[in-house]
Amino acid sequence: MTGIGRRNVLKAFPAAIATGALAATEAGAVLVPKTVAADAFPQPEVRRSSRKGVLSTRLDVRFTILKIPGLQQPVRTRAYEASVPGPTLRVRAGDRIELTQVNALPPDKSHGHGGQHNVPHDFNTFNLHTHGMHVDPKGMADNVLLTFPPAPREGMAAPHYLSVIDVPRDHPEGTFWYHPHHHGSSATQLAGGMAGVIVVEGDTDRVPQIAAARDVVVCINELKLRERTGGGLEVPDLTAETTLSGATAKFLVNGAVEPVITAAPGEVQRWRLVNAGGFTALTLELQDQALHEIARDGITFMKPAPRKKISLPMGGRSDVLVQPKTAGTYHLKHGNLTLMTLKVQGTPASPPMELPTTLPGRVPKLRRPDHRRTLIFRSDHHALPPAPGGFRNAYRILGTGHTPGAGPSDVPRDDDLRWGRFDPAYVNHTLRLGDVEEWTLTNPSTTHPNHPFHLHTNHFLVVSVDGKRLDPPIWHDTIQIPPEGKVVIRVPFEDFTGTTVLHCHQLQHEDEGMMQLIQYVSRDHPPQVNPTTHQPPPPA
Image (cartoon, rainbow, N blue to C red; front, side, top):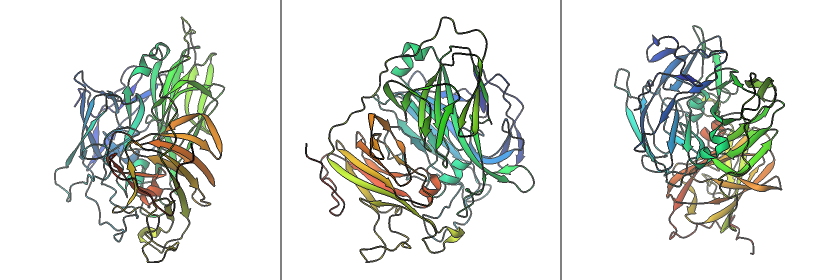
């Protein structure tokens, strides 16, 4: 573990703000006072790898009572290190991350899901996903098929779980994040703010104009809140279909409501924008200012791209350079919602700061595909028979490799509990290292149509959206599929074998079955061909 105290929950730029002592208020809960000075923008605690290239640290997970700047009532929630968000992990390509995770949550209650794994359950069990990182998906690394349960009985010692992630030497530098990914509990835990940022440092940080800029993490968490019996607020468990959709959404930036950041006229700042929520796709706009995008989902561009708005699906990230020229107050907004405020004041930057014109990015180009697949993200309202908690919506991925129905019929029924839904024993896609494939993602849903697609382990190149080709294409690991729309991507399968997942990153949809199992296999493995849906590559 680093020398930084695990309960030093909130940092302000440039120095830490530590206000008030921690005080136990209930069994397993900690009161964490947080205050942010009027001219100090909050930053999560930072934990860095050592000179030997190892980041060895501990993440404690327990119920916590948070006092959130800008929110009058305290909030009871599950959290990493008694903080929302958790610590920012800073590493370099070639480093090793050793994370000891302590599950100090209470024992899970009786499952209550009737044996149906696509009914949310086991809300105190978690695991670890390093979202967007190109690392090993098996063993003790980015393995989302592991489970980290709490102690089975009250009074027992909290169990410890070790994740060891070796960052490849050629790993892209950029902004990534971590969060729990246990099927059945991920939506509940992310609704409470269990997430943190990962920064992989590298060549982009050494571009002179970027190296001179203030480097700011902007982690946006979407908490789902309701009144708590006895006072205060809490994040409810997803025990019924409408539990989270019926709760109040509260957006935090680095653990605060509408914090304020300051800049001098002409100053350049680098903002690492992270949509660490599980439910709302954000369209971000900085009033009267351009957002000069330099990276998306951790992959640096070849040159900055000025944008009026940045669309970030759940799980998406964007690195932008901001350079306000004149004094004034500007709001970073999602629609009518203000997320944070930029106050531009004081003496103009001297000497004048500049924006870069070129960047050490990843070339947005791939060869022609070896194979094609079609994935259909379809949700049907109240299609399923009643389940515990009234979970009757069907969230399915159909098309190539879909999970077959439970019955012998070739035409599954809409009320088939298995058809198109996640089955932990069924591999939907076998993908060969070295292949490039073209996938068409469609979203015919007319109800509950919010479907961002996320692929684990490998980035993909977005070629077109709704028939409009992107010039240039853009690397992503998460992309919103427009309602009744279509996205075409090309994806290379590189470096790592193992079993992992793809899924909808509206995490309630994922917990209820909108996920598939994928298996990355070596080059000498025969390619998977589904004769009913597979299409050969187009002529050269």
